[in-house]
Image (tube, rainbow, N blue to C red; front, top):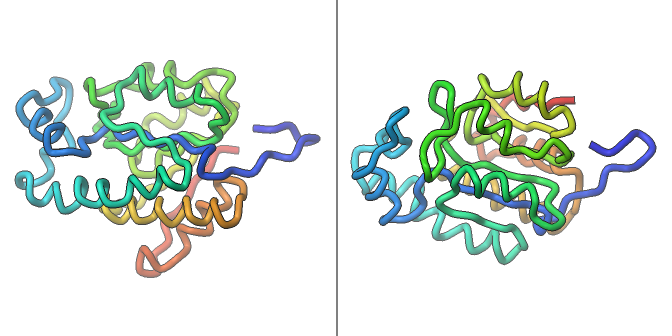
Length: 208
């Protein structure tokens, strides 16, 4: 992050890049079912067919992602490992949000599961913005990422929440950042405390 002498710049929606490693369309869902990843079960296998997945992921994504983009957020579907790395190199990016699924020791992406070394390698050593992993719950990744990418500010939670609620949460977060630009984690922490989670606030953990 910024040095003690330099105030950290506030974040606006146009400083955010959001990548989706899980399927966000009907064709992507069917492709993941027909060609499942070899290493681990895909997130789609948690659902009893297309209808519940459509209700929990595809429909809310199709409804809300255009709103993210109108606010200025860069949204990337079918995120590959190379695409994940590219998010950090976007002009003016201060917050990279990975919306995906962690399984044992790897994160699900469009081109398969990426293990801890691959994920760490994808994050540039010079990146000093935020990496938001709150939808993934990648606890095994955290120690290595903190050690090898100390400039990167990590944000994650341990509470399990359905995809549709996370998608609504991000809509509110981006609206907040549009109306009141702020430090990314401060805005996120304020939004997590709202009644979206029925009064149960996730325990947010941030690297120093």
